[in-house]
Amino acid sequence: MMNPIYIDQKEVLKRYKQPDPHTHKGIQGHAIIIGGSYGKMGAVCLSSKACLKTGCGLVTVFIPKCGYDILQIAIPEVMVVTDKDEKFISNITFDIKPQAIGIGPGLGLEIETQQAVYKLLKTNKIPLVIDADALNILSKNKEWFPLVQPKTILTPHPKELERLIGKWTSEEEKLEKTVAFSKQYHLIIVMKGAPTRIIDGDTIYENTTGNAALATAGTGDVLTGMITSLLTQSYEPINAAILGVYLHGLTADIALPETGYQSFIASDVIANIGKAFLSITA
Image (cartoon, rainbow, N blue to C red; front, side, top):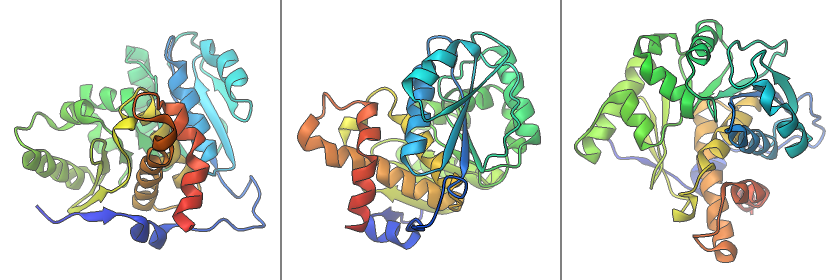
C-alpha cells in the first residue's frame, strides 16, 4: 500500500480559500440535504445546521412531512421542502438548482425511499455526498453503483463500509478493497474511524485531527453537512472531503479541554466549527 498523505494544517492551507469580503448568500452557494424519517429528524437538523455553519449561503432540506415543524423551529435559517409522504421520503423533487446535495442522514430503508434514491442517482449530475442510510440503500442494491457520478463522496463508518465492499481480515485488506472499490467506480471514500482516511483511487490521505470525543451519535451527520457545504462553495470534491474531515476533527480537539471526552456531543462539533476555521489561519 502507498504511504498516506497526512492531512495537517499545511496540507489544508494549500486547499483553503479565504471568503471574498464582498460575497453574498447568492454567491456562497445553495445546498440541499435530503434525509429524515419518523423518529430520525435529528440527523437532518444536525446535518443542515453544520452545512450552514461551514459557510454555504443557503440550505434547503428535503424531508418527509412529519419533520416540517421540527426543522422550522430547530433551525430557522434553513428552508424546508417536504415529500408527499408523512413518515418517510418516497419521491425526491425540488425546483431549486443547488450546487451540491447531501443525502442519507436519518433516511430510513423503506422500499419507496430506495426507489426515490434510485431515481435521483439515475438523473443527478450535481456534486453529491452519500452517507448513512443512502449508503445502506446502495449496499442493498449493488447493481446501482455504476449510476453514481464520478468523484461522488461516500462517507461510511466501518459497518457501512463492510456492507459496501465486503468483510476484511486485516487493516491492509480493508485498505486494498477500498482502493479497488474507489478505482472501479471513480468514487472518493471517506473511511470514518480513528484515524479517518480518505481514498481517492490510489491516493490515500490520513487525517491528523480528532479524538475519542467524536465517538458519539450524530457526528457523522454533522460531517456530511460540512462536506456538502464545502462542495457547494465550489471546492473540488477531494478538497471538500479533506477540509471537511480536518475541520470536523479539529472541533473535538478545540472543545476537549472544556467538555472532556464523555460529555462532547454532535452539537458541540457544530458549536466549534467557527473556532476550527479561525485556527486554520491563525
